[in-house]
Image 1 (tube, rainbow, N blue to C red):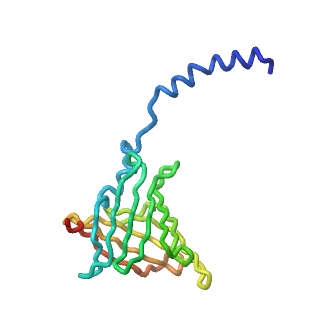
Image 2: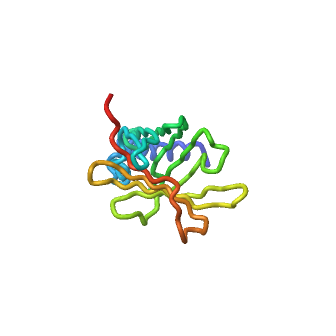
Image 3: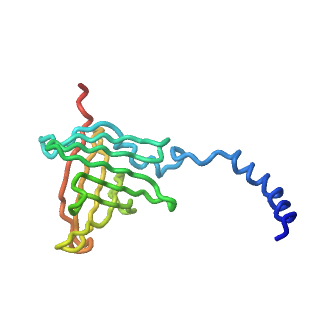
Length: 176
């Protein structure tokens, strides 16, 4: 292409580039999908039965574009999650713990469309070197009293049956 035509083309595109810069980018906090987990944001003491098994701090970040989970187990273990919405509008989670080299120490899950009413559910695959792959899902359900129930389950038969591995209630953390 001759230089003068390339220059003319660039001049024609300048107004379009300027218009794009004048329009503010869409804000995450204006889309409903970014509010699906608002009920879980906060500082929580986590109970299995009457026993405190850990503390979890859930916080929104980056103008509502992400949710961070900071898990601290009562036995000293810890893990971190990043929840976000991908370009296709699907929620996703990445979980990492200090046991990253063991099955379940790292998890990648996506939000699924069939959770119980009012809940959110994420599902993925855990690969096990000796036992193949298991489906893994987490369901978060807000309770009427401001608490949240979290159930983590695995399926060894491709989703036909599910076995709970963690069933806990999140209560607002005691203020110190």
